[in-house]
Structure formats: C-alpha cells, structure tokens
Amino acid sequence: MNRASLWLIVSQGSTAAIALVVSTIFARILGPADFGIYFVAVIVVSIVQIAIDLCVYQAILTAVPGYLEQSRRWTRWAITVAFLAALVVAGGGSMVQPRYIATWLVLAALMPFVPASMRPRGLLIRRGRLATIASVDVLSVLLGSGVGVILILSGSGILAAALSQLIIAVIRWLGLEAMCRIDGSASSGEIEVVPAETPATLTFGQYLRTISGVYQNQLAGFISRNADNLVVSALLGAAVVAQYSRAYSFMVGPLVQTQMALNGPIVRDLSRAAGEGSSARAVRRLAFYLAVLGTPPIVVVCLLGHDIVHVLLGDSWAATGTMLQLSIGLGLSALLALPARWQLIAERRTGALRVDALMQLSILAGVAVGAVLWGANGAVAFNSFFVGPVIGFVAWTLLRRPVRGMVFSVMLPTMAAMGVLTAALTLVVSTLSDDSVVTCVLGVLALLLAEGLAVLSLLWYKRAQRTNRRRRDAVVAAGQVGEGTDTSEV
Image (cartoon, rainbow, N blue to C red; front, side):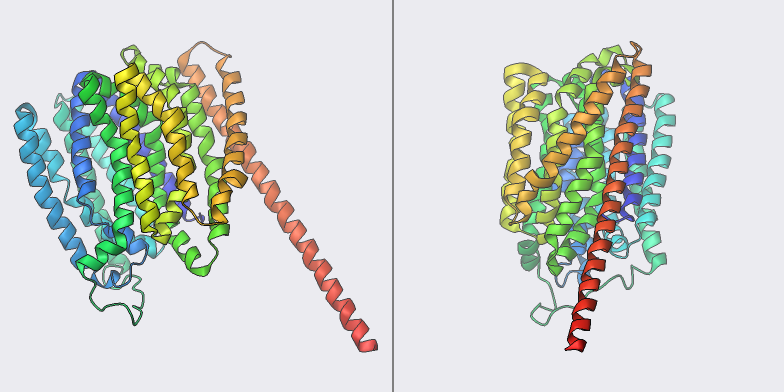
C-alpha cells in the first residue's frame, strides 16, 4: 500500500462520513418504516447491478491479456446490459410498489452510469492518478448529497433520497470521463504488449473463463453484504431491517467504503508483485498496515454503539445500538479476510475465489438461522461470532505457502495488540461522563491516541530496521576490505 493510495483512503473516508451524515438525516426525517422501504429498493437495484457486471474495472487492473485493447467495446456491452436490466428493475419495482414508481424509475436510471464510469476509473488508477479519482469522488458525493438534503427538507420524501443517488452517479461518470480524456488515458492508456500466444481478439468465452473467479467472488461478496437486508426484511419486516441496516452502516459500511477505495491500487500492486515473485513481502506489509489502521476504529465504534446511535439517530433507534455492539466480530472478521482476498484476486485464482465466494454466501444462511431463532440481534451475533471468523480463516487457507502463514505470524497478533490497546483506552474514557455526546468525543480521542501510539511504534521500528541494516552493510563492507588486503599481501 503506497503513499498515493492515501488519496483514495482520505476520499473514501470523507465520502463515507458525508454519506453517514446524509443517511442519518434521511433516517430521522423518513422514520424506520419509510427508510426501510427506501433501503430495500436501493439494495435490489444494487444487487441487480452487481449481478450483470462484466468486471470492466477488474479486468483493466489485473491486465487480462488482450482486454485493454478492446476495453471500449466491452464497456459498451456493459452499458447496454445495464440499460436493459434497468428497464426490468423499473418495471418490476413499479408493479410491486406502485406508490413509489418515481423512486424506482430514478434508482433504475442510475444503473447504466455505473459501468460507464468503470473504464475511466480503471485507466486512471493504472496511470497512478489517484488524487484525481479522489477529488471526483468527493465532489460528486458533496453535490449529490447536498441536493438530496435540500429536497428532503422541502418535503420530497423518499424520492429526494433516490435523486441524490442518481446525481452522484451522473457527476461521478462525467468527472472521471473528463479527467480520463484530459489525462490522455482515453486514447492511449497504459496498454500492455500482448504476448504472441494471446489471440489478437479476446472472445467473450475466453474473457469469461479468465475473469469468472473474480466475478463470482465479487458477486458473492456484494450479495452477502446486501441480500442479508432482504432476508431480515422478509422475516422480520421493513422497520426491523431499517434498524439492522443502520447498524451495518456504522460498522461494516465504512470498512466496505475503504475496501472499495483500495481495491484498485492494491490489486494492481499485488498483481505486479506476483509477477515479480515478491508476493510474500507485499502481503506481509499489507496485512500489518491493515491490522494497525483498521482494528481501532472497529473496536471504538462497537464499544460506544449505544452512545453513537443515541447522538445520531435518537431514542427510537435504540435497537441499532445493541446490534452495533454485537457486530464487532463481523467487522474484525471482514478486516481479517481482506489481504487474503485481494491476493487471490490479484493472482486470478479462479478455483480459490469460487470457494471464497461460497463461504461469503454462508452469511445469508447465518442471517436466516439467527433471525428465525433469536430475532435481529441473533442474526447479527451468529454471523459475528461464528460465520464471519470461519470465512476469514478459510480465505487465508486458500493462499499458497508461505503467504498463508502470515495470518498467524502477522495479522492476528497485530490485530490483538491493537484491539486490546484500543479497548482499554475506550473503556477508560467511557467511564468519565454519562453524557453520550461527551462520551463519543472522548471515544474519538481514544481512537486517535491508539492510532498515534501505533504510528510512533511503527516509525521507531522502521528506524531501528534502517539502523540495523546500515550496521550490517558496514560490517560486510569491512569484511570485504579485510579480505582484499589479505589477498594483496599474499
């Protein structure tokens, strides 16, 4: 994870914060019932979108042979498929919920813009223009969210929330396409030389065989993170799924946003490392950084779940606070699996990715079992403390040696150390005040303190490594000089 990737981390952190504020405003104004209906509609559109995705973005980043030269044609196909799917979604949603026909039409209208923006995004990442992508992402979310808030405050209801999503998608596509053309990526890009054994024209069947594992893993991951809301809605009702989804947005949502930001540059870098034979070093470094930076926010958000929900949503969302505390295992398990999953995607390990895809889909079974037996809290707890950890460990076992052993030598020890440190600081500050606002502020300070201590330790460790390396080099150089002197005397 290089320094340039920090641009995407900052942008996704900013957009996640904006989205959290805006969704909180929507939830407060719409209430659990209406917000639940809107959220289910968004999930349906998102699942259809990912199901018909032709992986334009992933194919560009992993340098599928023969793909870059034909990426325009593949993008046109992806847009056409998305348009046809949008017609089906708009018609089906309007028939099922005729009261919300305008909302379904607006949400369906954004679907073709998503694949349209994937090609310029992929090309810009390949050329290292991460700051450009970050700027476009933040600007689109700011403008779309601002319009949505103004409309919903004026009484537009669910339609305002849907229009906000459409505006974000359109501005993002326009911005990325414009920046890609200005940068020259649209005409030249970073086209790699096609090996002699690669066909001049990549057929659809060849492409599917190459990218099928990545596609299936991506689809399963998205379904496992979103279709669980549909399961909860079907079993427990729209009001309960609103509470459930809010807990998700506070915990797993920011983690997913960060993953989406890092997907491009990390898959690109790991793919190059695999080609150079340095995968072990790249994965070790990635696992360490993720554990250090990702563990503290998860621990703080879960331990202060009730206070966070009380401040942001109010007393009517109290059940969300309990679910948020129970989801700590789910967040840590998702963090644990990230390095392994990225490495599998970078290597395009089709068989291993299919196994991981099946494991991710087991989340839905966990939600169903937990919801039927113990309600919404049971659905969260069952996946958090059983299904999620199993998925994380299985993802690492799918890797080749010696990379797979890093889950025990690097990832888990670092996560445990950071988790204990952050939990101790958070529990101490939570006893200082009974006011939820003050407790949340103190929790943020505890998070910053934990991250600060981790960064200082990391800097000290790197400095010690450089010092030891210089000493070893000096000893080796002195030995070589001594050997040369002895030889000349003889």
